[in-house]
Length: 175
Image (cartoon, rainbow, N blue to C red; front, top):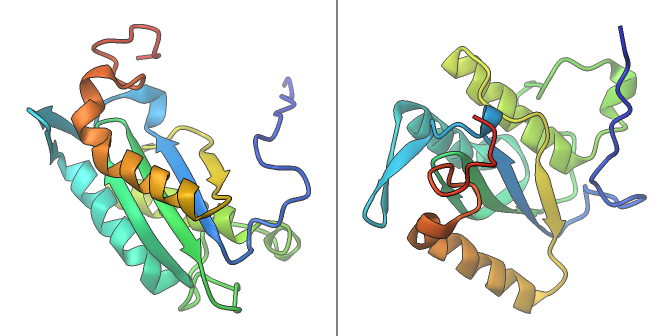
């Protein structure tokens, strides 16, 4: 079997468990529009989209975070996660994000644990593969950038008609 050498898109030597804001985008498997659809500028969430929405809201009960802003789009989600507190042994209540050996647990950042937990939780509850393999993140550098990202998330549904993830206007997205 051929092994793939995947290049990490995370910042090298950055501690993604630090108390700060992170802007994260997670896409659906193969870019399929399965989380909902638009009617004018309002998204009507599918059953899967509603499940994702509920699981997102529940993240604050599992981890020491604040879910600052988020939006569920037809084939991706955007969220701003603020890591808070000093105890980063989450998820709480004895739950694990994914099956890991004890050696691996210490090597994963809190942000990757949160995203891994969310993706596994949604996929397990929905009963099938939901997510693209990776996710995109940006460490928010300052208050002005945070405000710009918040505005982007709020305005994202209004701009779906020209969003690069909208497969109706961008045929290059894998189906």
